[in-house]
Image (cartoon, rainbow, N blue to C red; front, side, top):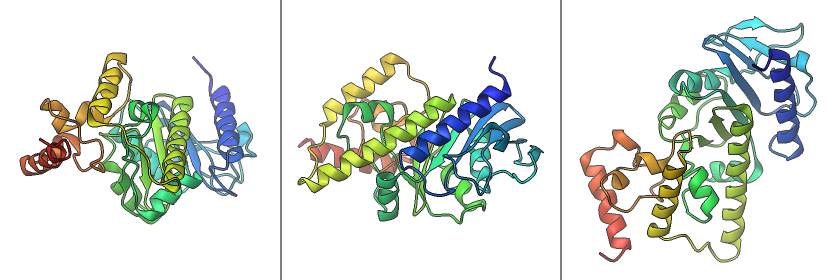
Length: 264
């Protein structure tokens, strides 16, 4: 089992990666790792993620209260958002929040990442919805994010940035990288006249590949009500299908739109 000091070093390394890749500026962003049900390591507030060393890292409990922090350091004010993810997703062991340029631009423009343009993005992410705007450091952001936690492993935060989470620190970081690469490809393809999206049949085949791989986490391939009913997946629904919370009228409306697009 990896000891706490090694995990702190890993957090610092991921911090350097997101800083060097331009996913954060100045003191932006935050990272956390779950040690057990009541102990979590997290990055401090007011510190550049590109210049951290292990002694910067704080330890908090499940309520975000400080268990250990060296003088001059205190947990990120966004720890409430991280704790909500851990509380509602027991399978998650790490959370990464950053402001990647392209993904954040889509979040500011109010455009979710729902166009199926690349197999890897469809398999790894499915869709990336936008959680409604909330005031930083308040319960507004956790409340906005909460409704997407059972359906996705990454969300955009309206006018704010992006949030990714997974079963390990490295995987949570990789989700963030994937979100940003997806957003950049989508933006640049739009500049070239618009992307040629994958067909519904192609998307469904990719969803099936994901199922066969048994990939961990949450994904529209497992939750889309159309897919459950044996109908084409509503990949471009902007997350409105919402899995089990969708009512019959919503499902029927989505199905009608998809069938019309298929010419049926």
